[in-house]
Amino acid sequence: MPGDDPTLLFTNAGMVQFKDVFLGKERRPYARAATAQRCVRAGGKHNDLENVGYTARHHTFFEMLGNFSFGDYFKREAIRFAWEFITGELALPRERLWVTVFDTDEEAFDLWVRDIGVEAARVVRLGADSNFWAMGETGPCGPCSEIFYDHGPAVAGGPPGSPEADGDRYVEIWNLVFMQYARAADGALTPLPQPSVDTGMGLERIVAVMQGVHSNYDIDLFRAIIAEVVRVTGARDVGSPSLRVIADHIRAASFLIVDGVLPSNEGVATSCVASSAVRSATVTSSARRSRSSIASSRCWRGRWARPIRNSPKARSMPRACCARRKIASRRRSPPA
View 1 (cartoon, rainbow, N blue to C red):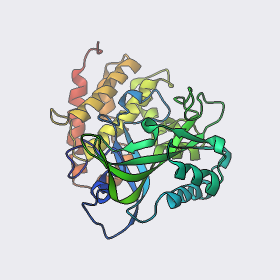
View 2 (cartoon, rainbow, N blue to C red):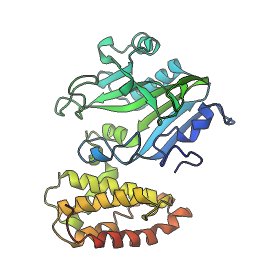
View 3 (cartoon, rainbow, N blue to C red):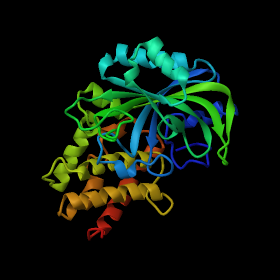
């Protein structure tokens, strides 16, 4: 949950906690940072709710890894750091990597081609819809450069910028945002006090690459949850998108509850996500018990919640689970 930001309902990116630092309103005792941030995208500008379960890469809840510079290093270093980490530490093959840049960002294009040595044919220029990043309608923003991984011809889809780009073959694994502007409510862009860097790498996406699977839902973070959902619902089609929807929404609702966002008239987002999971359970299984059992099964209180179970907010988990069972059990008939 964002601390002091009325423009956001949820933390939807790793840079949210640094917004005032980018704007020059706050100073920190450091000029560089690296984080692992819990994020929710279930509404607003960045809303992945409708895509969940139907693509290999979208989630309502995910963990964003990132490195940041506050007036310290900029484009050259950010690009070099990212390439060294991906091809060195992670040992990903260079020939599987593609890059995008903002269509007028000649500096970024030259850095990728001349300094890093990526073939110009695999550096794609894209417009503002894809490569000019902003957290919301207002606030820090700037051109960005994305790194894509090619999962191979066995997966449908084309490279970034192509008509088939929406497929799952080429998946963005890291976004390097060059924070240069502050966007006002009227859309005006003002240069930031100091150019900065905000990068974001989805944990689930890079884990899929490292574990040799093309779908985020096939990684170890999801396999146990989906297996439990199959057991509870008695689902026969283990490839059903509904199973992925349920698994994703269980994670999202659980972490929202841990952060104190309880299902209620005020906690509408949590109720909405959980209700969506219940609807998917209805589609997956005709067994009435599955709709109330999902909330109380051990996957709802799964191992991924345990490290933070001792926090004050986490102590509300049992009561919240009981509330979720009541909400689920009231849905006795399938939605229209």
